[in-house]
Image 1 (cartoon, helix red, strand yellow):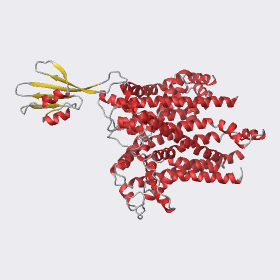
Image 2: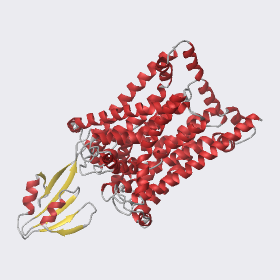
Image 3: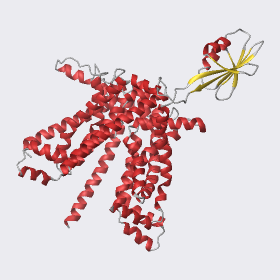
Image 4: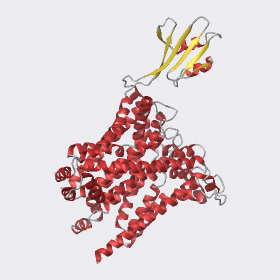
Length: 362
Length: 271
């Protein structure tokens, strides 16, 4: 309410300032909302497949199969083929090359023979509504499970490692806190690919870790290209995202509250369980979010450290959009499902947080 | 706190730091290695640094990253600040709705944002006849930078004393004058902070760039990614060492400055 009144006063003070955000509203519509809607549209669209149109001299257009097209092109030696591709340039082509060009959108072949001329057009047609893509998503259910499972493990490890660190830091002197904050943030400023790549040299079968262990006569560990390596990479990359929000919440907890609990006879465990942890829940929640979301969608970490063995959701999406399995429709469907599942997960995490926070307040 | 628990605390902190810095240490050491091996130390050399400065693809992508980050952060700071002022003056409902949309790129996984923008650019490109490249990369960076600026400016606007603006207007200031002379100086720390976050996010981004830059524009992260997949060269180590030194220097400078400021304030409070 207070805020609203201030806003209205602000409005009268500056004549019509809300118009200032109009350009950004347009920007949001085009570059934030429209792309998300496009993901939904693509997810429900048919995958374009080539349709071959054959126009004979009589002018009748018919849709034919690929076999018919191939047969037309191999008819005899006298045929002359002119190809017009998408860029609009026409040039003569040998039958072998012409056949390879048939897999390109908007290619027009004019096939002239002694007795007749036919025009063949290839068009990639899709765009109809379908649920088929989600069948493809269902097929990759194991990848979903693996991604969410590894992200879950990484988040738990980050929390278990990060909470004590944040707690210890919050008790340190100001100078140490400042230095430690810097030391935790410093790796974040370095390219994460470089740091992940460094883990390759450490974890390799003949890598630094195994060389170190062999000094003590310990048998080499096989870590690289396993899920363990992927989890190590995730924990390493995302641990600061857990520590920093935790620290910023814990450091603000009023010491008097803790002292009050102690005065009232609470033991160390009870103080932690019933005072400190509930008060630090907002930090836990934002830490969990900041680790889980990038962990579930990563593709570089799994590719570098997991080899081909750990195929994660991010890898799947990447291959459908930029890789050899180019299929925007299936990729969009996977992305859409992932987005929805993550949103549902976040909703429950936050509701769980709200509930306990309310309980603490009471 | 007892001395014993303090000792354990520090030991634990040291272990975590070891975990965080071991890979960086490895990168730095092997940037001076006289062999291509990533694990066997052969001898000391500066060769990789020399080669790095002759590697056109690395230097080119470094410039691209720098230019994109500077332009994107600058545009995002201006647009974000102005929009934040506009948003702040809105009624609660439309404001919250817009802030919700504004947060979408922050909450969503990077890959979703990247893929969604990739679809937009590919679809628009088919109609308007353009291809993914520097332009689309820049638009993508601006788009994910603006929310950070807005989020960092909004709290400062909430702290702003509205009466100051009214007073300026009463004294004959135009609305633009009030914006420039009253509001802007008051929210300045938020604006600077937002610009810095935006710049960092741009420099650091890999995933969104990867999906929106196409093949004609390459950022440093993209070059590193393609290098780690094909030809693994210690030039990467040399590059990361240089970046590490630069970042360390910057952070130290910022930290020393702010700790000095703290001390000055302490002294001010005492007197």
